[in-house]
Image 1 (cartoon, rainbow, N blue to C red):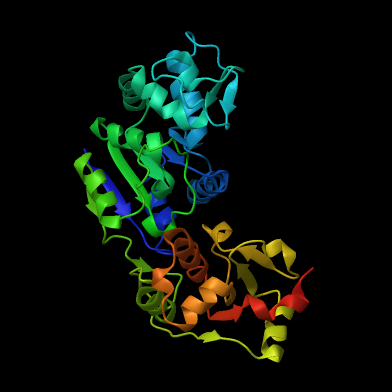
Image 2 (image 1 turned 90 degrees about the horizontal axis):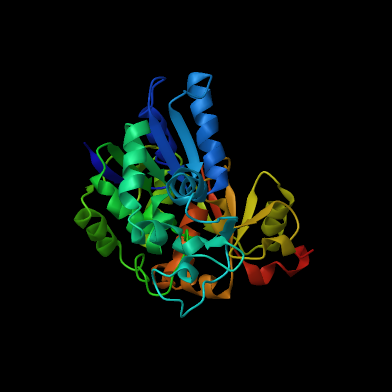
Length: 340
């Protein structure tokens, strides 16, 4: 059985690649981190078939853990009222009830996967997946961290086809964190790939290496200035420019067809705005305006964007690669008159 991790670039058709693996008779389990992406996957499947195939299930990750794993496997042995997003007690010993479950009988979200592995539930999860499905897919795999990443590594031994799809450099959120467990997972791309390879997965860097969304101009900028390699299927060129003329800035901010993307706190400004990281997964922008705060503006003008902290860099990569058209950069210092 093929066990594959496909590392994608932005706009390369990641969701379509998953949909193409399905037919009306598929027995497929698809898991993804966010509610938005779950909705998008279901919509795309419905668009392809007109109905949701009987054998296809799409879960958010924590719904998968609770409804598919925990309740059927240990639900009779534990009183579970739901999920707690509070931090677990620091000194509760592993393999004790308090290590995994709050006083209100809620599972700590960052230790659900850990609990299932610690209580020998992995074989039961594997057995259930093999019983009902022939294909197991995880989308947005780059957001899986800590115990959740460890669980995915353990699932490589299942006797079903496994496909993980994601873009390492669009890692802007974590499914969970738990102390030092896989603490440095996303610090180094090569080390990340090695962990997946050692777990038994084939690494595919070619299938989704070219973007349909972004022009060669944007792809060159991202590769050369941000330091993240991305290529384009397109041949046309667009504009990338730093705008500092007040009249041109006024035109940008009066045009709601052009979204204005901020590092954070976009709600403090008028017009159509959003934060860089929030736009992950969105595909409905033509020209975009990226607002640079003092730190990122200095890095831009000095040609040192690639030296930004990885969390900032990844969000900037997400923002830049939303553009089907041109990208305009503006210094946030010039935007006081556009505050709400």
